[in-house]
Amino acid sequence: MARPHPRRAKVEADEPPTLPLTDTEYAMILRTINSVRPLRFDAKCVTRLLSNETKLRLRALIQLMRWSGLAIQDAVKIRKADIIHG
Image (spheres, rainbow, N blue to C red):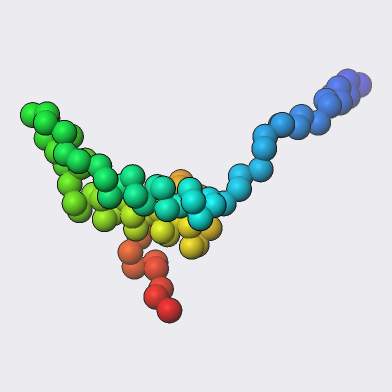
């Protein structure tokens, strides 16, 4: 006769709920993106990281997350073709 599996207590995580950004936090993030200045390093990755194109992409990511409600892990995977305007 097979022995029954022991019952385990249900595990619950004590994590605070994820709240949306406040208007102040949202404005601060956008200001911070705009105020980043290029650093003087020879590494190409640092120069690329601080380019104007990257700043625009960061702003678009933050705006997408704010107005769609997507988490960052979902927002970074979305393709441009998946976005419907209007």
